[in-house]
Length: 326
Image (cartoon, rainbow, N blue to C red; front, side, top):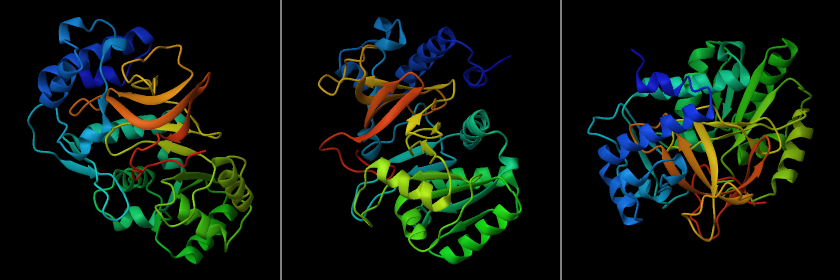
């Protein structure tokens, strides 16, 4: 018999997605006391929700002050958001690590193929220095699936990473370099290479280490320095179980069990499909043991091929996975 989580990963139509979203909403309304209280506070009763556009989205800030859980369980994992010194960090309790791995690997395969085809290099010094990073766990799982002996993390040992990149280029090995923004810029100030087949993932912003830059300028510097046509990115956060991916242009696509939607920056309950720009709401159906309906603090612009991430709302606290403002 197919379980709900099995069904979530085999959605094939808009009708399937809506049916699954409504089913997950019912489970989380009943089993997540915090989410139920929030729904009631904004005047939404379970029996009044008939389409997924009726579903309320929980503000992401609640992950900083509450355990956002559906049901009662002992977590297998705990993810915390990254941040600068003194910043309050979000916490996400993960009931089922296997569910997270399934969402991660299935999504990656849809956009990039099998992890076993790649070598993964991670230039993530600040994430490694902090504990319980969902991004580091993600990299560990991709490296485990890859199995390549060249996989590795790099802190500030840029020369070693440069030598490895040259070796992988010369061996014509498919390679993904995943780097936090400030560390990638530190690297390319000293090293340059022509590696057109390299996939460079930029993530995480400046962490207070450098002055913020517009995306176009940043991507221009990185493309020229690595000899690539596009800079890739992943839109994920510790509060979610799924990721969206951009293969260029900062426009993100989602796997079938995830959607990025917009709400008005003037009225958080206005989620009209006519909105072209607004604040991003995320539906992540894999996040069934927490909350699948999250109101982020990220601004977005709708495109025919996905969602462009524009940056943070004004007055919102900068978080670990923040993207630079334009």
